[in-house]
Image 1 (cartoon, rainbow, N blue to C red):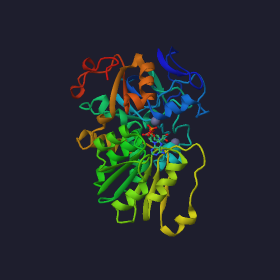
Image 2: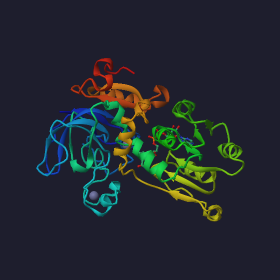
Image 3: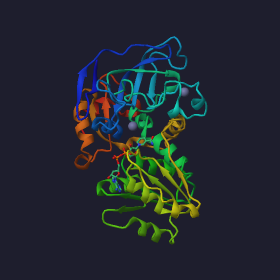
Image 4: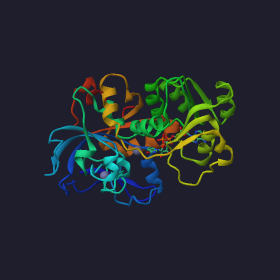
Amino acid sequence: MKALVYHGPGQRGWDTVADPTLIDPTDAVVRIDSSTICGTDLHILKGDVPETTPGTVLGHEAVGTVMEIGTGVSTVAVGDRVLVSCVSACGRCRFCRERRYGQCLGGGGWILGHTIDGLQAEYARVPFADGSLHHVPEQLSDEQVLFLADILPTSYEVGVLNGMVAPGDTLAIVGVGPIGLAAILTARLYTPGRIVAIDLDDSRLESAARFGADTTINNGREDPIARVMELTDGLGADVAFEAVGVPETFELTTELIRPGGRVANMGVHGVPATLHLEKLWIRDVTITTGLVDTHTIPQLMRLVASGRLDPTIFATHRFALGDTMSAYDAFSDAASTGALKVVLEGAERPRGANGRVAADLVAGQA
Ligand SMILES: NC(=O)c1ccc[n+]([C@@H]2O[C@H](COP(=O)([O-])OP(=O)(O)OC[C@H]3O[C@@H](n4cnc5c(N)ncnc54)[C@H](O)[C@@H]3O)[C@@H](O)[C@H]2O)c1
Ligand SMILES: [Zn+2]
Ligand SMILES: [Zn+2]
């Protein structure tokens, strides 16, 4: 089969590799019908993720069709259309029993496209199929559910739920890439009073406004702290989300919140950030961190099915799966292409779901 293979920092190829097979009884082999690229894949390609060794197939988000199941798989059958979660869950360990699948001790967690071969491929082996695959309702298109594999649950769980967003809250979102934008989309389920988006990139701020931000601030030109204070009678936001992953934006979020406010850090940090405890200790603040567990996928899928949530707004570019190399070029040059999420479409993906058929989504057409 063909797959997108990581060959070490800066190097990738669309290569012929061995077809995946069942290894453990709890495995399934899935044909990839739709996949996508994550900012984390770009981190791997930069060489920031040393656990990912050259030769690994990348990708941790997909919708597919079950082709084979091991003898220990009981909740999915051959032919089922499934969403593959970016996090695999053994279902048995202490953390899986607490729905902290990201912390799985039984061999799961974020393994796909990280420590084992991933989903930007024609086929993939999915370990712990019972805990890692979700049935997709027939009426939903691949594109309606694809982004529930990673970005929506990340922002909902690590942002909105950890940040305890409540109706009427003022939210400040620092960084409105896909993760910050998904935080806007899922926070709106709670009817916040005001959503303030902060980014250095005007095109990202335009997207934020389209996703539902009420106020946008370019912190390259304007002082975001002064603006947020002005909007909140000098108190600060109820909740601030960090969705970049660098020290300055983390430090900024802690300055944007009111006494008793919450900082929900979503960014992946590679270097230490300063926690100004000397200023924060007296302000009753809460700071949370987290790796996505994807335990909210079923809930988010119901919201999509009922028309309350529409993640298709993320799909800015579409490519045939065989053209994944070009998709990487477009995604990694988001500043000029405006890419939010690219959809990679397998050749044999089922047609007809919600009228979104492969025919009108010609290879490489944005
Ligand atoms: N916690 C988790 O489980 C989890 C899961 C997925 C992704 N992430 C992380 O979330 C973060 C965001 O992901 P993404 O895919 O949206 O990334 P992205 O790079 O596409 O978006 C980041 C945004 O931050 C903006 N930005 C950069 N520096 C800034 C600054 N100083 N001030 C304001 N804005 C700034 C950029 O213009 C961009 O729009 C990353 O760190 C990613 O690794 C975490
Ligand atoms: Zn990801
Ligand atoms: Zn587990």
